[in-house]
Length: 97
Image (cartoon, rainbow, N blue to C red):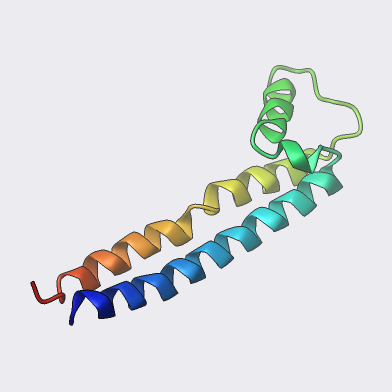
């Protein structure tokens, strides 16, 4: 396999990883809004809500079952890139140098 062929394979795989990650994050935004949180503050708002809940100060009108789902989704948003790394490591070994 030539480097140019590898680049094409990588580009296709990277596009797929980007789309999958985007879909997971969009789903997390939707669930975050349903939970009563601001979906624009996806990085910190669910974390702060759970921290308050664990300290015994739950936020009113927040669905903590959905907050847990948001945090679960956010943890999985990086999985497509881990798979991409494994895939590219495997096909990189086939590149003629």
